[in-house]
Image 1 (cartoon, rainbow, N blue to C red):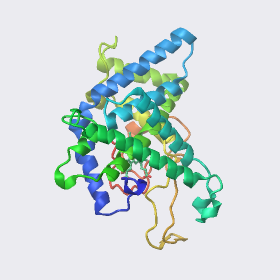
Image 2 (tube, rainbow, N blue to C red):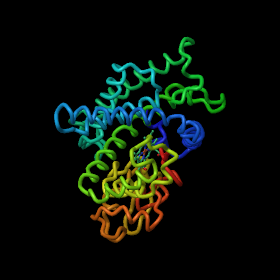
Image 3 (spheres, rainbow, N blue to C red):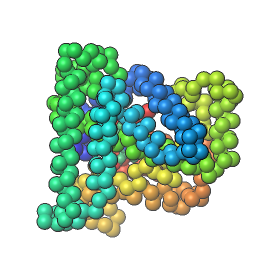
Length: 331
Ligand code: HEM
């Protein structure tokens, strides 16, 4: 299934087609701006849960709240808001199982001989992907029923794919691969990033105070309203702090997908035979003193002193990205 998703499909006409659909239809500025109320709702709910935990227990376990918020956000973004909570839990469990599987050691990944799959990783991957196919297929079929009016004008990615012009339309199985990739990639990355942001804010209260001051100046001292997407350009220090968290704690520390050598190649003194998957150690790059001054210091100011893109075009934060410019979830 994954070989038909954006991050895995080999560079080809199909891959370029997916990139175009993603940029023009799924992450179009209009669709993203229509998703703002959803983001507000998810953020409000996380704040309420945090307050409730403080009042009832006197402490907050943020991880669970952030993971649930991130899952709700991505499921609503990708599949719309009509999912039952049972279905949300089912999809959440499948995401969790997927992450468990990609972090498991599998000898067969290094020596491609079937009998080396001692932990049954491959078998469990196949089982999970057929479960994903069935569940997402069922959701797509529901949406195609004439009684379901949410396709028309829906802001979610599924609506975007179902209303593509005829010449751009994807087959059902390709659509499922693309939708699942978004759900899978967009859940833990966001939750982990939020968790590190909160941890860094606790550890560096001087920086937290500066961010608070910037927010007060922008939206009013008494939090008269929510922060909106349109405020972001007026919050440069907040942006710099988020970038600094991404640098110190990249949510994807090891990049390997989409870096398969399609032919024999020499990189400096190393020979890389065709068929090799290169693993890029993103974490090592973002902590390398020859690339970053004082790499272990949390200093958002470095991103104010120099304009460094986190969207995929700067090799210090997204090396060897084949996307020429950005990852799709740049908004
Ligand atoms: C903090 C949040 C996120 C971070 C740090 C992040 C980071 C990245 C990085 C570094 C890559 C390139 C990976 C590689 O080259 O191996 C990537 C690719 C990708 N991301 Fe994200 N991502 C985030 C959120 C999301 C979300 C929310 C979505 C979907 C809604 C998403 C969808 C994708 C897709 C589809 C690709 C594949 C792009 C391609 O290969 O053409 N990401 N992301």
